[in-house]
Image 1 (cartoon, each protein chain N blue to C red):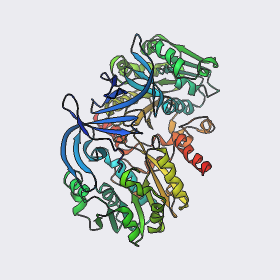
Image 2 (tube, rainbow over the protein chains, first blue to last red; image 1 turned 30 degrees about the horizontal axis):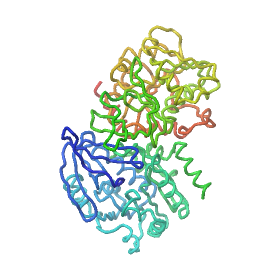
Image 3 (tube, rainbow over the protein chains, first blue to last red; image 1 turned 180 degrees about the vertical axis):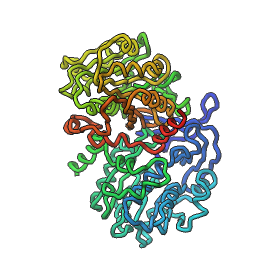
Image 4 (spheres, each protein chain N blue to C red; image 1 turned 135 degrees about the vertical axis):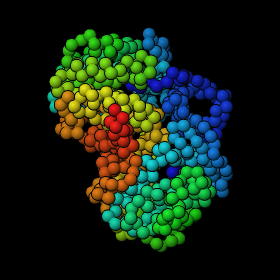
Amino acid sequence: MSNRSPLSGFKKDDDSVVWIWNYVGNAKIKIGYKIKKVLHHEQSEFQQVSIVEMDGFGRVLVLDGTPQISTFDGFIYNEMISHVPIVTHPNPKKVAMIGGGDCGNAREAMKYDGIEKIDVIEIDEKVTEICRKWLTPPSVFEKDNRFNIIHCDGLEWMKENDEKYDVLVIDRPDPVGPGKKLFQPEFYQYVFDRLTEDGIAVFQSGSPYYNQATLKRTVQQLQERFPIVRTYLVSIPLYPCGIWSFTAASKKWDPLNADLTKLKHQSTKYITPEVFQASFALPKYVQELFDKAIEES
Amino acid sequence: MSNRSPLSGFKKDDDSVVWIWNYVGNAKIKIGYKIKKVLHHEQSEFQQVSIVEMDGFGRVLVLDGTPQISTFDGFIYNEMISHVPIVTHPNPKKVAMIGGGDCGNAREAMKYDGIEKIDVIEIDEKVTEICRKWLTPPSVFEKDNRFNIIHCDGLEWMKENDEKYDVLVIDRPDPVGPGKKLFQPEFYQYVFDRLTEDGIAVFQSGSPYYNQATLKRTVQQLQERFPIVRTYLVSIPLYPCGIWSFTAASKKWDPLNADLTKLKHQSTKYITPEVFQASFALPKYVQELFDKAIEES
């Protein structure tokens, strides 16, 4: 989930309507989300955690004033960061997810019977507690024995454990504040080391429009370590400018050659076999970012 | 080009920075675009026409306070509304474009040597005059004899002429105010009648996220008249929520079976043969809109 702004917060306008302001691209764009109701608001050890009701997005998790995931369009983020690596790997048994304490990504992983273990590593216990109350269907927590939630720092967890995973989902925030360390070169190496010999990881890699440096650096770092690196795009209405990127880094299995049979009869709202494949077709201006990155390196 | 808001306008904030406010989804979302400089601003017979300089988007055409097209991301809209029908038709000679008086769509059509005539029908002469000065490269107007610009009402032009076209590009605004008539059932019939026997048209069909009724109605109207109707999606960072739809309606040629050779070596910044195909892979929540529309009808 993305956490973009140090400036933003809740504000009342002249008509006493509450808005959340999200500043992006060095505050060149400012997005106001009209709040119907603040359902919950508290300061955790790490951040301000809020649940609000918005027309057009339903219930929304807001961290430090930045909308993260909504009940109306959250399935897009959850499905696209989870199903792509799980489907690409022909037989994933163990899945770990860094971030995503609302457990929306984990819910998607639970749809695959072959998976034996789903670990979610979320730094902020309050996020999970509050999302459990307001956002995530209780079934996610109650019915699935494969699912474990571990509340600790993602980087520390990476360093201090040896267990290997077939799939790692890196649902990191933007490279500001405490999230910054999940963008350091050493982090990519830890991810590589925690993957099985044919493992695959997916990283949240920023907006390909207003945050191109993040995407370019992610791809460069991964290309130094992994034989297969593939960026794919999604359209997330809640996020500024809509277009968003994820990058898959794989030791053996290429998403472009994935057997999509497993996806055919999945209960999803965004991804289909066709959408899976289409998301890897990059607009020329995005593809050129990488060609340029290779020239510069 | 889209013209969404009756409320919006230029406003100074407390620090004297000028913003444009764009209200969408019945004002549930409010987008502020920070203005570096207002380069031009005037009231035409039809609307307020402005050219502004924005960080992150470059020069932007603004109509009645709503950003329409920018020098940084305008190629996305221009390419995707133009190349798709031109490439789908195996041999288009005559192309007409309703709206798009900035002539960015026409510039894309000019890239195809086989085309013999490109007519642009733009109601507002001021839009063309001002874009010619500030936005569109002069080469568009100066070097191409195939290109004609006609300043009149698009619906009237449809009704009062008999000439038939292989490709019609309907770059209409949103269904508010004067643009409303370009969404009436009779308009779709006029488009059908002005196409050659194997002609194809493309319509701007709104946001598939916050403007689903417009998209559904467009598809329904077209399915009553055309044997082939295909919606495709693009990501336009300037537009609220990013995701946007176009719908192709064709008498004979199906975009899904198009020969994409012509596109291979085109000088473009967004579309490629792969992006052309990928844009027709609809997320399940969009596909379900149409399935539901069929049930309801």
